[in-house]
Amino acid sequence: MMTRKIGAVAATILVILVGFAGLAHAEGWVGMAHPWQLGLQEAATSIKAHIDSFHNLLLVIITVITVFVMALLAFVMVRFNAKANPTPSRNAHNTLIEVIWTVVPVIVLVIIAVPSFKLLYFEERIENAELTIKATGRQWYWDYEYPDNGGFSFSSYIIPDSDLKPGQHRLLDVDNRVVLPVDTNIRVQITAGDVLHSWAVPAFGVKKDAVPGRLNELWFRVDHEGVYYGQCSELCGTNHGFMPIAVEIVSKEKFAEWVAKAKVAFGTGDASPAPVQLAAGPAAVR
Image (cartoon, rainbow, N blue to C red; front, side, top):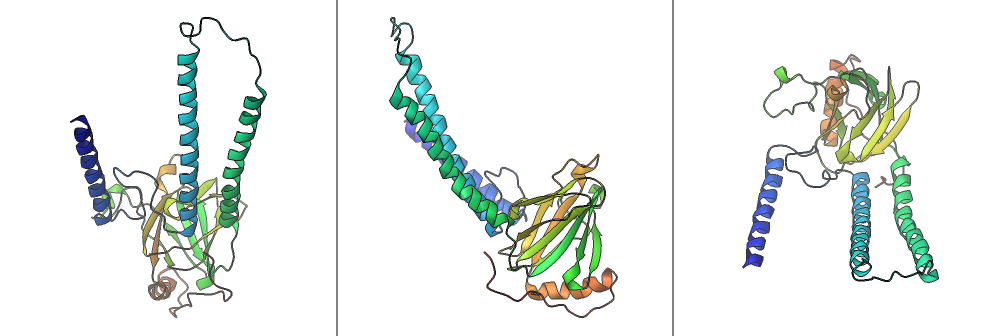
């Protein structure tokens, strides 16, 4: 009877969570955190997929270690308490156990290190970039420049609560989104004009500090269209929580159309469409 009740409760919870997940997609919460979310945000890039895989591996390892240590502590408390073991053992060393507790942690660290270094290399290697943009952090907004598309630039400010429209998200939506093409290796050069900032989009698995006088860079390749949100992840002053990042991923055809309009809207005056893929080379990096 008790087993059936537990099963019914578990099934109910699962249905509720699935319902919330469906509601999240219906309400346009793709590319951002949503109420009652469990786990990490859905991966939109291969980088984020690798991070999720590494996270899952670490979760298994730390769970096994925790369960083992708890079981060991319970065994010691039961087996060696004063009532069960009135005459304490005088053994001080055990060579086999000392070898085991030295070798096993080394093996665990190697298991963690191999995928860790592979992931780090994959994140930092920028190869065959097809499009480059520049992001400059300022107090408290972002400037964006498209050097491969005529050099036009614009500022991106948070939309105040009083100006939010239906479907827009508080503290996340901006007046000018970063528009980028899908299935394209994109390099983002990052710097700051005043203090430290950080350009981070969780669904892309990217986060890089913006440092005055220094040019950092990251890359990503988004697998499907949509709007993805991030925020400045460095304590940069009183309005630190009010400089979000909104990246809209569109088809390559729509991106070319947007570039033509952006050139006029942001000052270059040249409305001719720009090519989407600007760097010819080997197959795209995944």
